[in-house]
Length: 188
Length: 154
Image (tube, rainbow over all chains, first blue to last red):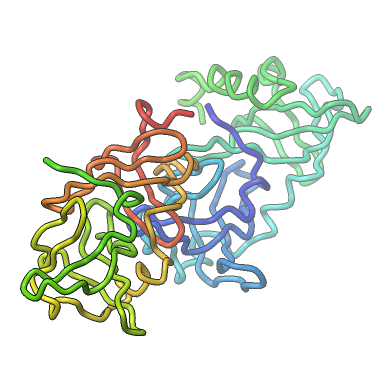
């Protein structure tokens, strides 16, 4: 499983597979902290000093996310009508998870959320959070599950997820793949 | 099948078969939206305006000269697609290669084509070869290709 930090998508071109044109670039990643769900992207026009586009791109309209571009099938994947309907108008949701304190089920402080981790490819979604431990040592990664409780200031990670915490993104990809076993998927 | 390459044919004489007059030289190509076929040759002529020779007006794409049916077949550009190609906005040579899953896999260094049909036979990049079946679109940002595990892995 290939993973990326959500913020690393900012500025990536949005390219149409049908035309080879860069129709926009990612302005911001819209994330629903309560549902731990990638909602989509707000967009900028391409080019320096180019402004914001009214149109948005929902996660479901993405053909694939790669390290160098966000791919869409055709330009019509970009939707300039239902920014509100898709929840993309509500940017507040994107930030409420960053900075939250993460507690394990047994009450120890695992750190603070510094990034949302997405799986890339044709079905992009949020799979984890990057944490900065209280002692400011190297960051670690914790997988997202439906069992994570969120209050607005705290995230409480269930005990079974603690075993899948990793210190590097590559190792975390493998951990997420095994954590999201078929039985666990069903519960979500 | 005889093939030649974009880099190799650069500057080749374009001659009108009926009058035997040289009407210019090969400067570039206008390709279809997928980058799979040559639609027209961009001819560096004598006038100020950019001129193209439609592939249907090519009598023979020879090793030493491109034979046009008549000099009158040379035309000025008449649409945005041709303009983008002639101005170098959409061009195969030097194009960034992007897979459908959003990974950059090098840049195009040359294109091999069938001199009879104008059909692209192979695209050469600085990372390897791309088969025409993989080509999805050629635009101003990139040549988009299907993932090619066999040929473009660095």
